[in-house]
Length: 96
Image (tube, rainbow, N blue to C red; front, side):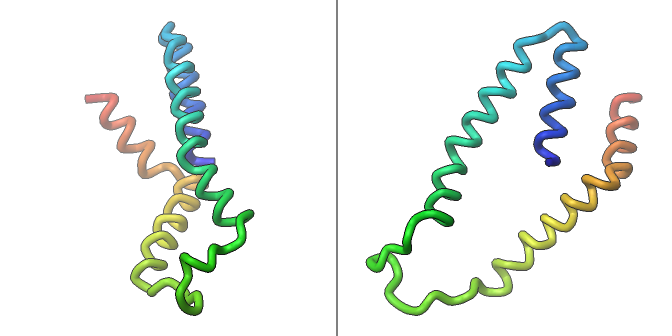
């Protein structure tokens, strides 16, 4: 959701500024994101594991690989509901 909201705000800002080409750039960005990520999601969820790829039992990822994405996800969700710290920084930057 945070990515959608930011693109929505950028698009609305582009329209308000009289620059409708911004919508095209944002749409192209969304299409490229889908092209990059949908094959990964498809392979992860809908394809059977390839026996040649896995030589042993599947194990959980090490804690050092799990904790950073969990922290990032938690901060993203928190900022979705409480964006005030970044909004304050943006207002300060716009005022200077």
